[in-house]
Amino acid sequence: MKILVVGCGSIGKRHISILQKLGINDISICDISEDKLNQIGDNFNISKRFIDYQDALKNKVDAVFICTPPNSHLSIASDVLKKGYHMFIEKPLSHTLKGVDDFVKEVKDRKIKVAIGYMMRFHPGILKVKQLLDKKVIGKVYSVCIYGGQYLPDWHPQSDYREEYSARRELGGGIILDATHELDYSIWLFGKPREVFCYYEKISNLEIDTEDIFSMVVKTEKGVTVEIHGDYLQRSYERRCQISGEKGTIVWDHNQRATKLYTADKKKWEVFPVDVSWDYIYETELRHFLDCIKKDEKPVVNEEDGLLALRFAVAAKKSGNEKRIVQFSDV
Figure (tube, rainbow, N blue to C red):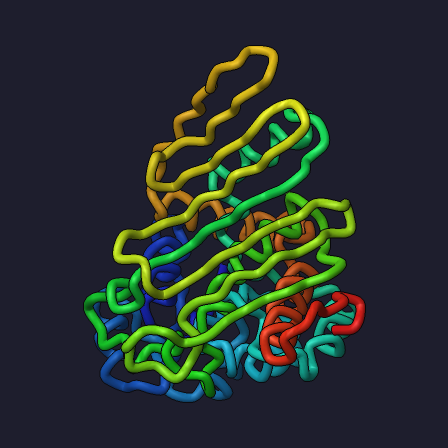
């Protein structure tokens, strides 16, 4: 299988490493920074290197990994689609909704495999939550609290956070778009939003021009109330989800490396350990995408999911800007 990776930043580097681990040796790479391109090419012994992705696309490949800042995702993906290549697009699908509906429709018409990089769907802790919910062990779900936070300068300590896309609005940065992992798995577990209310702002002294914190309350089509908080401010890495139902509680906590279940009948916690690396989760995600190409199957996190998560983020920003509840159907 021949793969082109566009964008050699931290996530592009990680995908290249995992692809080689999975036995993909025919890899081309592209980045607008010649220094970065040569560094990654030398580190991974890759000779096919391109500054312009248009030149790279002239060489036939089976799939393209789009690992650039969000503001360029859709334009690159549209050019890849014209070539008829399958693609893995890092989240979010884009930074605005402009042109996304047309792209999703054309993907369906062309029968191209598109995966979106929401790797939390492959996290064993979240998968356990999904399993418990499907079995209805806590009965009707009443409310959910989802939390994610990490100090932005600690995300990629080897680079200047001020130069990262997360810090720059024009590149599609900001914690709301960065936190679409949480928005995506919220939809997957609890249903599409019906109403969204969000408050966001920049409150820290970080040198960024994007929001660094948000809190939202969502009512889903399934009638579940979901609270979601995200920020660039937590000095410790935090990621967790608590679900309250009529018969018990489910908690997933990344730091505790466990999913826990409390049921009213047993009146005690049952702990399901989750001790895996991020590389394991990314590897599972990429293996699934490559298998979908080989078996002609639709990826579990596809272009339609990418559109839903992006609409969710746009609805949240609209709510924050207008200081009101936004109907998801209006976005």
